[in-house]
Image (cartoon, rainbow, N blue to C red; front, side):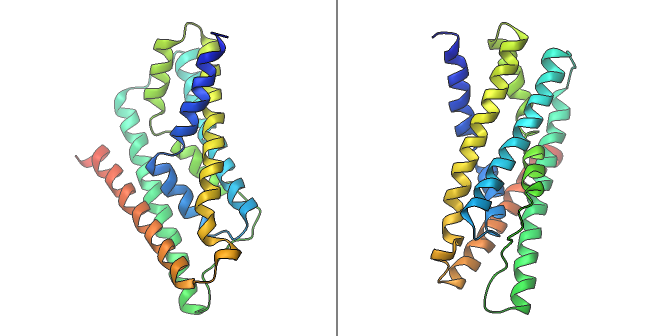
Length: 209
């Protein structure tokens, strides 16, 4: 039972990690374009898989291949996440306002089954904090296989956490609750503005402060 406990703990930590503010802001911007719960949840899963891919890749580089990555590099990683959040908020706000000028009766929704954008956002998001996580695991785990297993289970926990988060954020934008276009527009603009603000904060803190 004892060897399994760190892996169970990794899943729990990964689940809660997915619920951090910058992650929720990113997924909220993505699910505002969905009216289908299935597509929204798939966006969350795709984000989680992208996030896991980056964390495991950095883990392999640092744990198995002994590649040294300096703290300064991780500041650039954090800044890249900020730029992505800034761009994501601007893109969503532009799409909504442009569509509203042309079609006054509703805000745009995406019925495309393509989840590449969500996966790409997750890939970039995995850069933020990955260095600290890998270094922590390296100090706590005795072997490479155990450490990499921890990172993988952590990532899968984040997939589950983001799937839950995306389903919750999707509710105000579902067809059944879409009676108030003003409310949906307001929530979309708010999530975009928060995403841009948080992204700008990350860029400032890691490049300019």
